[in-house]
Amino acid sequence: QVQLVESGGGLVQPGGSLRLSCEASRNIFSIYDMGWYRQAPGKQRELVAAITSGGSTNYADSVKGRFTISRDNAKNTVYLQMNSLKPEDTAVYYCNARHRIFEVNYWGQGTQVTVSS
Image 1 (cartoon, rainbow, N blue to C red):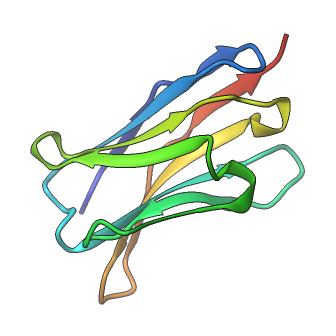
Image 2 (cartoon, rainbow, N blue to C red):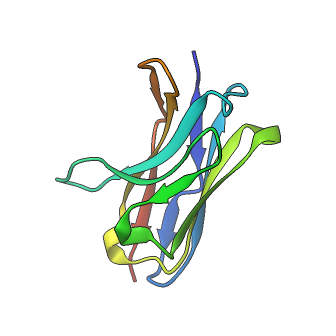
């Protein structure tokens, strides 16, 4: 069992920045791919950014050049640095851990990000 705890959400003005954190309950990055998803009201949950166990990253087109996913293995923590935020980035952001081989997924509880003036 793995627990994921997100933090760092909040209210920010357009053009501002936030950094989300996702701390895992144990060291899993060598066997789990990690991702950040978001879900806005009335919309489906979508992948924002991901980092594989090997360190490869990928991003949704809508956030490329503005968001950066990274991880700190020593702290069992994955980060999402969000810059140049737009109102359309408003959503609940979820951290996800997906096992590289088995069909095992874990989700965090979500953290609200609101971009508004």
